[in-house]
Figure 1: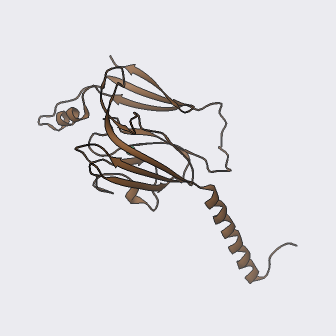
Figure 2: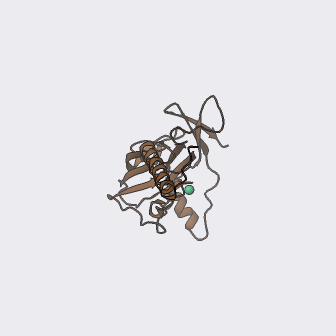
Figure 3: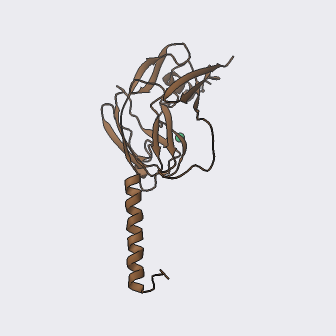
Length: 216
Ligand SMILES: [Cu+2]
């Protein structure tokens, strides 16, 4: 009773189910647009002012929050006067979009000073990820931020919790990333030593709270 037995009707019924599924996943998934400007800014990550690499005037860079199945569009303009830049989306599988992986000289050319490049990719799995510069020592210069993908619309997480704190941890040297690069690539190599600080950025309810652990 209620079973579709005719072969033609079976095919039609399957096609109907498939299109209904495709339609529902299309309306649930969103395109999320971001406009970023990467530039050097003055900042005091641990109380000592220096020059860091920021995005839209902030360090660490803005948090991207999306849902599984969404498409991320990041229109990135390189405002660094003398360097190229790329962003790697750490942990994102880039299925079908290898050119958006952001590895300089491997999956794309570095974005030249003054140029704009649009990263477009789908975040297919929920998780807590991060993004970072993938050219030269730019991650060490401060080019990174959080990328958080919640479960798809209508799906539940497989566990319960009372609150959420997203923590970004990073080594921090008082030497500039350029000085570190010259030290590490000189012959004989000059070791840059231990970082002066482990910098912690905790993201709570829309605000960054910064903590520092001084290494002595
Ligand atoms: Cu990475």
